[in-house]
Length: 167
Image (cartoon, rainbow, N blue to C red; front, side, top):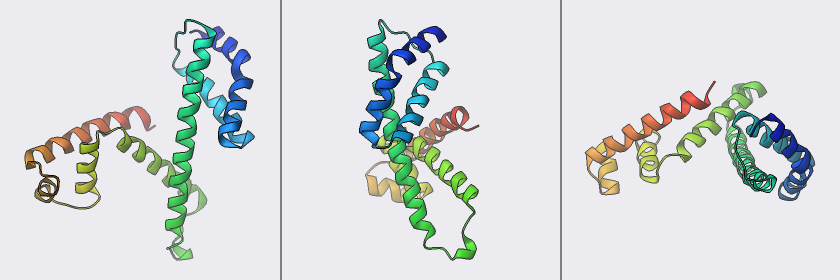
């Protein structure tokens, strides 16, 4: 799909996509932003379609994915804002710092969500919960070697993700 194909897809389907997103999100402004994001994705990573209808199907999948990302980000933002309520006003980060922190948390969440379940569970147990390899092995009824293997997998996958998604 070249730039002209994307322009044609945009002309034919932008209104449809915006309306689809308005129905899903209930917010015309968010819908307009996500519709624009969808077409920007096509410009960055061109795809080939058998027809413009195939392009519309692909756009609906992108729209679905963008909605999930938006909802997940809002959940993360709300959890972070809730945690800030525990802090003394003197220790609150400014708005720019809060946004940067949320951006990092969202990217970490994206990294973790791409890990296989066992790898993610092991990584969180060791890195977040502070369990030893032996404790994780006992808890999950696996060998210490498996714990080490899962951690190695997590580090490799997260390093690759970081190199491709963090600027």
